[in-house]
Length: 77
View 1 (cartoon, rainbow, N blue to C red):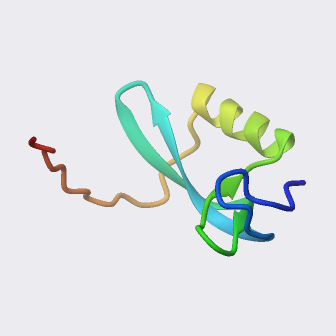
View 2: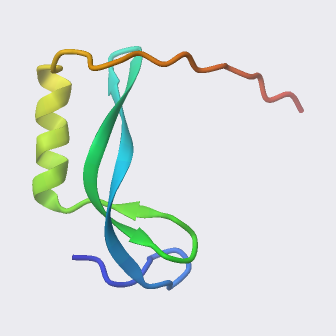
């Protein structure tokens, strides 16, 4: 359990978040993931069990619930 944010020192609270997961070149979102989230900056931390479950999903993706379209932008200097 992470009680303080490593980046800003804010307090964390347990919430459900959307995590990104990559299957090779394919980006997917996993919804309803338990995390400790900083109340100040929003950084999310996952416990070991949650990380292991996300890793198992990378090996054997579950059926797709829905699909979203995401725009891609170029960062030019």
